Image (cartoon, rainbow, N blue to C red; front, side, top):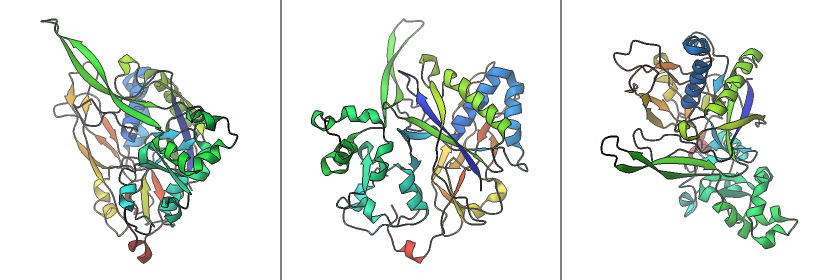
Length: 387
Protein backbone atom coordinates (compact mmCIF):
# COMPACT_ATOMS: atom_id res chain seq x y z
CA UNK A 1 0.00 0.00 0.00
CA UNK A 2 1.57 3.35 -1.02
CA UNK A 3 2.05 6.09 1.55
CA UNK A 4 0.98 9.71 1.15
CA UNK A 5 2.27 13.10 2.23
CA UNK A 6 -0.16 15.99 1.90
CA UNK A 7 0.75 19.66 1.62
CA UNK A 8 -1.58 22.58 2.29
CA UNK A 9 -0.68 25.78 0.42
CA UNK A 10 -1.93 29.05 1.92
CA UNK A 11 -1.66 32.20 -0.22
CA UNK A 12 0.37 34.99 1.32
CA UNK A 13 -1.66 38.13 2.20
CA UNK A 14 -2.73 39.88 -0.97
CA UNK A 15 -1.37 37.14 -3.24
CA UNK A 16 -3.34 35.75 -6.15
CA UNK A 17 -2.54 33.08 -8.73
CA UNK A 18 -2.57 32.88 -12.49
CA UNK A 19 -3.03 29.35 -13.84
CA UNK A 20 -3.27 29.69 -17.61
CA UNK A 21 -6.06 28.00 -19.53
CA UNK A 22 -6.02 28.82 -23.23
CA UNK A 23 -2.57 29.62 -24.55
CA UNK A 24 -2.39 33.26 -25.59
CA UNK A 25 -5.77 34.11 -24.03
CA UNK A 26 -4.67 35.30 -20.60
CA UNK A 27 -7.97 36.73 -19.32
CA UNK A 28 -8.93 33.44 -17.65
CA UNK A 29 -7.27 31.67 -14.73
CA UNK A 30 -7.99 28.13 -13.56
CA UNK A 31 -9.06 27.17 -10.04
CA UNK A 32 -6.29 24.57 -9.67
CA UNK A 33 -2.66 24.04 -10.66
CA UNK A 34 -2.09 20.98 -12.91
CA UNK A 35 0.54 18.45 -11.87
CA UNK A 36 2.79 19.18 -14.87
CA UNK A 37 2.80 22.91 -14.02
CA UNK A 38 3.65 22.16 -10.39
CA UNK A 39 6.46 19.79 -11.38
CA UNK A 40 7.86 22.33 -13.86
CA UNK A 41 7.86 24.96 -11.10
CA UNK A 42 9.86 22.62 -8.84
CA UNK A 43 12.35 21.95 -11.65
CA UNK A 44 12.72 25.69 -12.32
CA UNK A 45 13.30 26.26 -8.60
CA UNK A 46 16.01 23.58 -8.56
CA UNK A 47 17.66 25.27 -11.56
CA UNK A 48 17.43 28.67 -9.88
CA UNK A 49 19.19 27.30 -6.78
CA UNK A 50 21.81 25.02 -8.37
CA UNK A 51 21.83 25.74 -12.09
CA UNK A 52 21.24 23.22 -14.87
CA UNK A 53 23.06 20.56 -12.86
CA UNK A 54 20.54 20.94 -10.04
CA UNK A 55 17.62 20.63 -12.44
CA UNK A 56 19.08 17.54 -14.09
CA UNK A 57 19.74 15.91 -10.71
CA UNK A 58 16.13 16.54 -9.70
CA UNK A 59 14.58 15.14 -12.88
CA UNK A 60 16.94 12.18 -13.39
CA UNK A 61 14.96 9.70 -11.20
CA UNK A 62 11.87 10.47 -13.31
CA UNK A 63 13.51 10.15 -16.73
CA UNK A 64 14.24 6.41 -16.69
CA UNK A 65 11.02 4.60 -17.62
CA UNK A 66 12.48 1.36 -16.29
CA UNK A 67 12.95 2.86 -12.84
CA UNK A 68 10.19 3.77 -10.40
CA UNK A 69 10.14 7.48 -9.45
CA UNK A 70 10.63 8.20 -5.72
CA UNK A 71 7.23 9.90 -5.56
CA UNK A 72 4.22 10.64 -7.73
CA UNK A 73 2.60 14.05 -7.71
CA UNK A 74 -1.07 15.03 -7.74
CA UNK A 75 -2.30 18.29 -9.14
CA UNK A 76 -2.84 21.11 -6.63
CA UNK A 77 -6.59 21.32 -6.04
CA UNK A 78 -8.66 23.85 -4.07
CA UNK A 79 -9.00 23.45 -0.31
CA UNK A 80 -11.94 24.75 1.73
CA UNK A 81 -10.51 25.26 5.21
CA UNK A 82 -9.19 21.84 6.21
CA UNK A 83 -11.32 20.09 3.62
CA UNK A 84 -9.35 18.96 0.53
CA UNK A 85 -11.41 18.92 -2.64
CA UNK A 86 -11.06 16.24 -5.31
CA UNK A 87 -11.86 16.41 -9.02
CA UNK A 88 -15.26 14.97 -9.84
CA UNK A 89 -14.44 11.38 -10.89
CA UNK A 90 -15.21 9.99 -14.33
CA UNK A 91 -17.06 7.12 -12.67
CA UNK A 92 -20.63 5.98 -13.17
CA UNK A 93 -22.47 7.45 -10.16
CA UNK A 94 -24.78 5.28 -8.06
CA UNK A 95 -27.74 7.62 -8.22
CA UNK A 96 -31.39 6.96 -9.00
CA UNK A 97 -32.38 9.24 -11.86
CA UNK A 98 -35.03 11.85 -11.11
CA UNK A 99 -36.49 14.77 -13.11
CA UNK A 100 -34.27 17.85 -12.92
CA UNK A 101 -31.38 15.95 -11.38
CA UNK A 102 -28.93 16.55 -14.21
CA UNK A 103 -29.35 20.29 -13.80
CA UNK A 104 -28.27 19.90 -10.17
CA UNK A 105 -24.94 18.44 -11.27
CA UNK A 106 -24.43 20.48 -14.43
CA UNK A 107 -21.67 22.68 -13.00
CA UNK A 108 -20.16 20.19 -10.55
CA UNK A 109 -16.34 20.25 -10.59
CA UNK A 110 -15.10 19.14 -7.17
CA UNK A 111 -16.27 16.79 -4.44
CA UNK A 112 -15.33 16.31 -0.79
CA UNK A 113 -13.40 13.27 0.52
CA UNK A 114 -16.61 11.55 1.69
CA UNK A 115 -18.41 12.03 -1.63
CA UNK A 116 -15.26 11.05 -3.54
CA UNK A 117 -14.95 7.81 -1.53
CA UNK A 118 -18.57 6.87 -2.17
CA UNK A 119 -18.24 7.47 -5.89
CA UNK A 120 -15.07 5.42 -6.42
CA UNK A 121 -16.48 2.62 -4.22
CA UNK A 122 -19.74 2.76 -6.20
CA UNK A 123 -21.90 3.36 -3.16
CA UNK A 124 -25.39 4.94 -3.34
CA UNK A 125 -25.55 8.73 -3.24
CA UNK A 126 -29.30 9.35 -3.28
CA UNK A 127 -29.34 10.64 0.31
CA UNK A 128 -26.67 13.24 -0.50
CA UNK A 129 -28.38 14.54 -3.63
CA UNK A 130 -31.91 14.75 -2.23
CA UNK A 131 -32.71 18.14 -0.66
CA UNK A 132 -35.25 16.57 1.67
CA UNK A 133 -32.68 14.16 3.15
CA UNK A 134 -30.41 17.10 4.12
CA UNK A 135 -27.25 14.99 4.05
CA UNK A 136 -25.49 16.79 1.24
CA UNK A 137 -24.69 20.47 0.63
CA UNK A 138 -23.07 22.48 -2.14
CA UNK A 139 -20.62 25.38 -2.31
CA UNK A 140 -19.49 27.69 -5.09
CA UNK A 141 -22.97 27.83 -6.67
CA UNK A 142 -23.08 24.11 -7.21
CA UNK A 143 -19.48 23.50 -8.23
CA UNK A 144 -18.49 21.78 -4.94
CA UNK A 145 -20.40 18.88 -3.33
CA UNK A 146 -19.87 17.76 0.27
CA UNK A 147 -21.72 16.10 3.15
CA UNK A 148 -23.15 17.91 6.15
CA UNK A 149 -20.78 15.90 8.38
CA UNK A 150 -17.87 17.72 6.72
CA UNK A 151 -19.14 21.23 7.44
CA UNK A 152 -16.97 21.45 10.57
CA UNK A 153 -13.86 21.35 8.35
CA UNK A 154 -14.89 24.55 6.54
CA UNK A 155 -13.12 27.81 7.48
CA UNK A 156 -14.09 29.12 10.90
CA UNK A 157 -13.86 32.66 9.48
CA UNK A 158 -16.99 31.98 7.44
CA UNK A 159 -19.06 32.38 10.61
CA UNK A 160 -18.34 36.11 10.48
CA UNK A 161 -19.91 36.23 7.02
CA UNK A 162 -23.25 34.81 8.14
CA UNK A 163 -26.21 37.08 8.98
CA UNK A 164 -25.92 38.96 12.29
CA UNK A 165 -28.73 37.08 13.99
CA UNK A 166 -27.04 33.80 13.13
CA UNK A 167 -23.68 34.89 14.55
CA UNK A 168 -25.26 35.23 17.98
CA UNK A 169 -26.50 31.67 18.00
CA UNK A 170 -24.39 28.93 19.50
CA UNK A 171 -25.76 26.43 17.01
CA UNK A 172 -24.84 28.29 13.86
CA UNK A 173 -23.36 25.10 12.39
CA UNK A 174 -26.77 23.48 12.79
CA UNK A 175 -28.27 26.49 11.01
CA UNK A 176 -26.05 25.68 8.03
CA UNK A 177 -27.75 22.30 7.61
CA UNK A 178 -31.21 23.88 7.39
CA UNK A 179 -32.80 25.19 4.20
CA UNK A 180 -31.72 28.81 4.79
CA UNK A 181 -28.18 27.86 5.73
CA UNK A 182 -27.82 25.46 2.80
CA UNK A 183 -28.77 28.23 0.38
CA UNK A 184 -26.26 30.53 2.08
CA UNK A 185 -23.54 27.91 1.80
CA UNK A 186 -24.28 27.41 -1.88
CA UNK A 187 -23.35 31.06 -2.51
CA UNK A 188 -20.05 30.88 -0.60
CA UNK A 189 -16.96 30.84 -2.79
CA UNK A 190 -13.79 28.90 -2.06
CA UNK A 191 -12.08 30.63 -4.96
CA UNK A 192 -12.87 33.42 -7.39
CA UNK A 193 -11.30 33.98 -10.80
CA UNK A 194 -11.60 37.44 -12.32
CA UNK A 195 -9.69 39.40 -14.99
CA UNK A 196 -7.53 42.29 -13.77
CA UNK A 197 -6.86 45.35 -15.93
CA UNK A 198 -3.24 46.02 -16.79
CA UNK A 199 -1.63 48.76 -18.89
CA UNK A 200 1.23 48.59 -21.37
CA UNK A 201 2.93 51.58 -23.00
CA UNK A 202 4.18 51.57 -26.59
CA UNK A 203 7.90 52.44 -26.58
CA UNK A 204 7.71 54.33 -29.89
CA UNK A 205 4.39 56.17 -29.77
CA UNK A 206 4.15 56.32 -25.94
CA UNK A 207 0.54 55.25 -26.36
CA UNK A 208 -1.06 53.20 -23.61
CA UNK A 209 -3.11 50.07 -24.14
CA UNK A 210 -5.19 48.13 -21.65
CA UNK A 211 -5.09 44.36 -21.47
CA UNK A 212 -6.47 41.89 -18.94
CA UNK A 213 -4.88 39.05 -16.97
CA UNK A 214 -6.84 36.44 -15.08
CA UNK A 215 -6.31 36.24 -11.31
CA UNK A 216 -7.52 33.47 -8.99
CA UNK A 217 -7.89 34.32 -5.31
CA UNK A 218 -8.98 32.05 -2.47
CA UNK A 219 -11.29 32.95 0.40
CA UNK A 220 -9.78 33.48 3.88
CA UNK A 221 -8.95 30.11 5.37
CA UNK A 222 -8.91 28.47 1.94
CA UNK A 223 -6.12 27.68 -0.50
CA UNK A 224 -4.67 24.71 -2.36
CA UNK A 225 -3.50 21.22 -1.51
CA UNK A 226 -1.52 18.53 -3.30
CA UNK A 227 -0.28 15.09 -2.40
CA UNK A 228 2.93 13.14 -2.94
CA UNK A 229 2.38 9.41 -3.26
CA UNK A 230 5.31 7.23 -2.20
CA UNK A 231 4.98 3.84 -3.97
CA UNK A 232 7.72 2.17 -1.88
CA UNK A 233 7.30 4.13 1.35
CA UNK A 234 8.52 7.60 2.26
CA UNK A 235 12.11 8.35 1.24
CA UNK A 236 13.31 10.91 3.81
CA UNK A 237 16.03 12.25 1.54
CA UNK A 238 13.66 12.80 -1.39
CA UNK A 239 11.06 14.28 0.96
CA UNK A 240 13.57 16.77 2.35
CA UNK A 241 14.53 17.77 -1.18
CA UNK A 242 10.88 18.21 -2.18
CA UNK A 243 10.04 20.31 0.87
CA UNK A 244 13.15 22.47 0.48
CA UNK A 245 12.15 23.27 -3.10
CA UNK A 246 8.59 23.90 -1.96
CA UNK A 247 9.77 26.49 0.58
CA UNK A 248 11.77 28.35 -2.05
CA UNK A 249 8.90 28.04 -4.52
CA UNK A 250 6.58 29.72 -2.00
CA UNK A 251 8.77 32.83 -2.13
CA UNK A 252 9.42 32.58 -5.86
CA UNK A 253 5.77 32.08 -6.78
CA UNK A 254 3.71 29.37 -8.45
CA UNK A 255 2.05 29.92 -11.82
CA UNK A 256 2.22 32.96 -14.06
CA UNK A 257 2.58 36.70 -13.47
CA UNK A 258 5.10 36.21 -10.66
CA UNK A 259 6.80 39.52 -11.45
CA UNK A 260 3.79 41.36 -10.01
CA UNK A 261 3.61 39.22 -6.87
CA UNK A 262 1.34 36.41 -8.00
CA UNK A 263 1.74 32.86 -6.74
CA UNK A 264 3.40 33.33 -3.34
CA UNK A 265 2.36 31.00 -0.53
CA UNK A 266 3.30 29.29 2.71
CA UNK A 267 2.89 25.57 3.25
CA UNK A 268 2.35 23.00 5.95
CA UNK A 269 1.66 19.29 5.99
CA UNK A 270 -1.95 18.21 6.37
CA UNK A 271 -3.97 15.07 6.88
CA UNK A 272 -5.41 13.16 3.95
CA UNK A 273 -8.12 10.50 4.24
CA UNK A 274 -7.02 6.98 3.40
CA UNK A 275 -7.12 6.47 -0.33
CA UNK A 276 -7.43 2.92 -1.68
CA UNK A 277 -4.63 1.33 -3.64
CA UNK A 278 -5.47 -0.10 -7.03
CA UNK A 279 -6.14 -3.79 -7.57
CA UNK A 280 -3.78 -5.64 -9.96
CA UNK A 281 -5.03 -5.19 -13.52
CA UNK A 282 -8.04 -3.27 -12.20
CA UNK A 283 -9.29 0.26 -12.89
CA UNK A 284 -7.57 3.26 -11.32
CA UNK A 285 -8.36 6.96 -11.14
CA UNK A 286 -5.57 9.47 -11.62
CA UNK A 287 -5.25 12.61 -9.48
CA UNK A 288 -2.67 14.00 -11.91
CA UNK A 289 -2.50 14.58 -15.63
CA UNK A 290 -1.52 11.29 -17.23
CA UNK A 291 0.54 10.86 -20.41
CA UNK A 292 0.62 7.12 -21.30
CA UNK A 293 3.72 5.48 -22.72
CA UNK A 294 3.50 3.98 -26.18
CA UNK A 295 3.63 0.44 -24.76
CA UNK A 296 0.71 1.26 -22.43
CA UNK A 297 -1.55 2.09 -25.35
CA UNK A 298 -4.23 1.17 -26.20
CA UNK A 299 -4.67 -1.18 -23.21
CA UNK A 300 -5.02 1.55 -20.54
CA UNK A 301 -7.86 3.17 -22.49
CA UNK A 302 -9.81 -0.03 -23.01
CA UNK A 303 -12.08 -1.99 -20.70
CA UNK A 304 -15.59 -1.42 -19.34
CA UNK A 305 -14.42 0.91 -16.57
CA UNK A 306 -12.15 3.20 -18.60
CA UNK A 307 -13.61 6.70 -18.74
CA UNK A 308 -11.55 9.78 -19.40
CA UNK A 309 -11.20 13.23 -20.89
CA UNK A 310 -8.28 14.31 -23.07
CA UNK A 311 -6.63 17.72 -22.96
CA UNK A 312 -4.13 19.18 -25.43
CA UNK A 313 -1.26 20.78 -23.50
CA UNK A 314 1.31 23.04 -25.17
CA UNK A 315 2.53 26.39 -23.84
CA UNK A 316 5.56 28.58 -24.32
CA UNK A 317 9.21 28.03 -23.49
CA UNK A 318 10.97 30.99 -21.91
CA UNK A 319 14.48 29.89 -20.95
CA UNK A 320 17.39 32.25 -20.14
CA UNK A 321 19.49 32.92 -23.23
CA UNK A 322 16.83 31.69 -25.65
CA UNK A 323 14.01 33.39 -27.52
CA UNK A 324 10.47 32.45 -26.57
CA UNK A 325 9.29 29.39 -28.48
CA UNK A 326 6.24 27.19 -28.59
CA UNK A 327 6.71 23.85 -26.83
CA UNK A 328 5.58 20.69 -28.54
CA UNK A 329 2.01 19.71 -27.77
CA UNK A 330 1.04 16.51 -25.99
CA UNK A 331 -2.37 15.02 -25.22
CA UNK A 332 -2.98 13.92 -21.65
CA UNK A 333 -5.76 12.35 -19.61
CA UNK A 334 -7.13 14.95 -17.22
CA UNK A 335 -7.45 14.58 -13.46
CA UNK A 336 -10.34 12.36 -12.42
CA UNK A 337 -9.98 10.11 -15.48
CA UNK A 338 -10.24 6.35 -15.00
CA UNK A 339 -7.90 4.01 -16.88
CA UNK A 340 -7.26 0.28 -16.98
CA UNK A 341 -4.05 -0.69 -15.19
CA UNK A 342 -1.76 -3.41 -16.45
CA UNK A 343 1.13 -4.68 -14.36
CA UNK A 344 2.55 -2.99 -11.30
CA UNK A 345 3.13 0.52 -12.67
CA UNK A 346 4.07 3.30 -12.54
CA UNK A 347 2.09 4.53 -15.52
CA UNK A 348 3.03 7.52 -17.60
CA UNK A 349 6.31 9.26 -18.33
CA UNK A 350 8.20 12.47 -18.73
CA UNK A 351 7.90 13.80 -22.27
CA UNK A 352 10.63 15.89 -23.89
CA UNK A 353 8.68 18.79 -25.44
CA UNK A 354 11.64 20.72 -26.85
CA UNK A 355 10.68 22.67 -30.00
CA UNK A 356 12.21 21.78 -33.35
CA UNK A 357 15.77 23.02 -33.67
CA UNK A 358 16.31 23.23 -29.91
CA UNK A 359 19.92 22.28 -29.08
CA UNK A 360 20.11 23.00 -25.36
CA UNK A 361 18.94 21.16 -22.23
CA UNK A 362 15.84 18.94 -22.24
CA UNK A 363 12.45 20.49 -21.57
CA UNK A 364 10.24 18.00 -19.75
CA UNK A 365 6.47 17.67 -19.44
CA UNK A 366 5.47 15.65 -16.35
CA UNK A 367 2.92 12.97 -17.23
CA UNK A 368 2.99 10.31 -14.50
CA UNK A 369 -0.40 9.13 -13.26
CA UNK A 370 -1.04 9.36 -9.52
CA UNK A 371 -3.41 6.39 -9.13
CA UNK A 372 -6.22 5.70 -6.68
CA UNK A 373 -8.10 2.42 -6.72
CA UNK A 374 -11.62 2.28 -8.15
CA UNK A 375 -14.08 -0.53 -7.54
CA UNK A 376 -14.88 -2.46 -10.67
CA UNK A 377 -18.22 -1.69 -12.24
CA UNK A 378 -21.02 -4.19 -12.48
CA UNK A 379 -24.47 -4.66 -13.91
CA UNK A 380 -26.04 -2.59 -11.14
CA UNK A 381 -23.77 0.36 -11.88
CA UNK A 382 -24.81 0.33 -15.53
CA UNK A 383 -28.43 0.78 -14.51
CA UNK A 384 -27.78 4.14 -12.84
CA UNK A 385 -27.20 7.61 -14.17
CA UNK A 386 -23.84 8.72 -15.52
CA UNK A 387 -23.32 12.36 -14.54
